[in-house]
Length: 580
Image 1 (cartoon, rainbow, N blue to C red):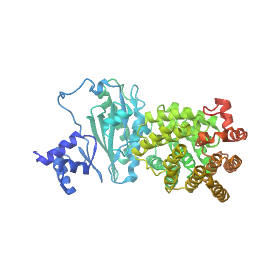
Image 2: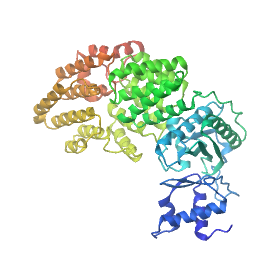
Image 3: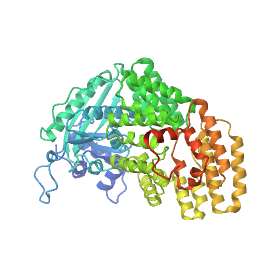
Image 4: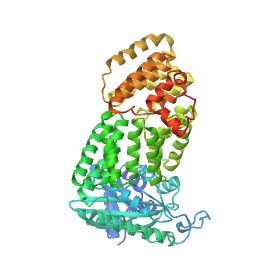
């Protein structure tokens, strides 16, 4: 079939960007430069190309509703361009390595994102078992979920030779998956295949998909990879329990109060269907521990989280997520020696996973005063997952604690370039601290007058910071600041998230030189937390340079013992920052 010129240009553009999601606006600008045309004109050209290719659905060109189009057909370049250099070696000469991106949800229903995530995660787990194949961790590759980054850039970022991407469509009792393997150096397709199965055959589809991908990788790397071992047994035989678990895990990542409540409910429903489903118990533990850490759930939730983590480990002693969740709980209970063991075990079981490195430094290294180690491991997280926003943000936080102001500025810029809003915590707080350290007092109110999001404790934190920073900038404001802070102390009633407000009052009083009030607030905070056998979520802020006088006070050793820090120092060595 002969293509008209405009349809041919449409196909040419899609071929040049094979495997990429091409936005409709980009195609319109490329095909009709400088001209305003209706979107229907583009639809006609796509239809013409599909007819020419014999594409009856999404076999070659996938429509991503509301976004654009993606050419998923295999593309092969005939001949070698004259300008090729020695660096442009075929993928077979590169180390055997792959990054698995989350499969795009092309159903038009965002509530089904979990299907693509689940497929990709199972593939990562399976491919990681193939000897001599390096596989990027989930955290590293999933950071590119919403990005329009070129596949070659992703491959460079993650240091892999190939990238696997695809799409999933679920309709009725059918699931359709299209997967494609892309050469990370050239950007060209190495392999592509569609899979169409009944929804009840999801586990069989995963096994068939994994087998086909490993075979494609063996061809791509000149047969240097061994034959794939058989997939391990599914984590549960109950498909509905598995779906509920995937949905819950997807919600946990979003981080709102409602998402955490829904995730907990979904994990419990999954457990109700299969009480021996270790992943669901671990997912419940992780969701609840994360909710407490984010001050979305009360400290009393730690008991449930710990029970779920321990149940998961009885069912599967080698489940890294369960060890990490238990470590989070142990940290918030002040049992840092135990937390250290749990995180070390999680990192051993899932080596190179930046998520567990990040959790380890956040829940152990920072609160116990291993500030330099936390900073170094934050840099490791950045190298493992350069597009992961939490890693970028937290590197800025630990740099602030360590006193590396220039690094804080760079991380603020990098996080915002990755899409993190400049008005979202902790960005205003980071900028305000830097302004205070540089004596740029005029900017303080501009940074801190941004209205924080829920929970209420965030508003209290921001108000404390505002009062403290004003008093530091202008000593005449100190009496008013102290009055307002004391008023906040009197209003605190034991709400689920108020532990963090207490600790910000501790910091505020210490920065204003009111050490008696600072230690009294620390006592009250621990009185509150200890009702549930906890010391509260630790964020390492006590190790900031501004709190040196607080740490050097004769009362600090008793506070450190009550926080559980002394036990850790006696077992594992002293902090690497200023001595307590």
